[in-house]
Length: 303
Image 1 (cartoon, helix red, strand yellow):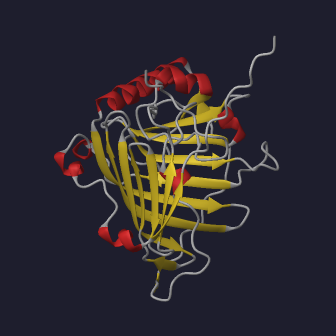
Image 2 (cartoon, one colour):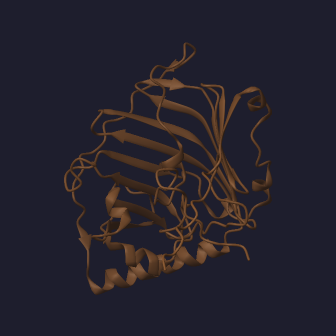
């Protein structure tokens, strides 16, 4: 019988968050290539402050309604295609970058398939036009980068195993929809934040604080979801990564993912059926294969 809910080896790809991009996009290059073009430097980011969450009975009822709608929408998604803008602000290193691209998802068995293309990156006032591709298919995660001319093939699950992408505890790279209401409430203290001028239009702003003792609390101080009231999916996600040296202090990084064109037309469309393959130019890249380590046999029982 096939095993399910595979858990990756410690230290590999486990990153308990709703967006694969946040764990796969990597770091910017040390220096931009010579053909880079100048760009306007990113605007300074707002200071990190504690959110003023609303905890009235009406707000709690609204939170449950939003989470139930998110769960239901996730169950109906067979495929998805939309643009993505991913920003990482390093508060310790005092740097930031933004990557621009597209994400595609297709529900399949035994495991779903997803594909991400980053076409360019803004970093330090420079536009870096070097593509990056991330493809998960079957059991393997492929990471290809034009700048380094490399493809890394990482085995994520073993033969016969499947991944539950909607499990907060067991998936190595959760996706931005379909999480179950009960799991979210078990892992987070969720509050409803009052709408702000800079929020995406017609969204509910959920602030999620990891509960004490949760694995999520080891990596994040809080997560924020801006859930569209029509499509019932997050159109913006913000993650505050904890400082390992002081988990109760200010975050070390702030990561933002925005889906600017995520609408009903992005979901269950034949247009997403375009190839889930790395492009031909990557065939000449240097390739590195990283299979999972052999499982350790359990120690024999002593009489």
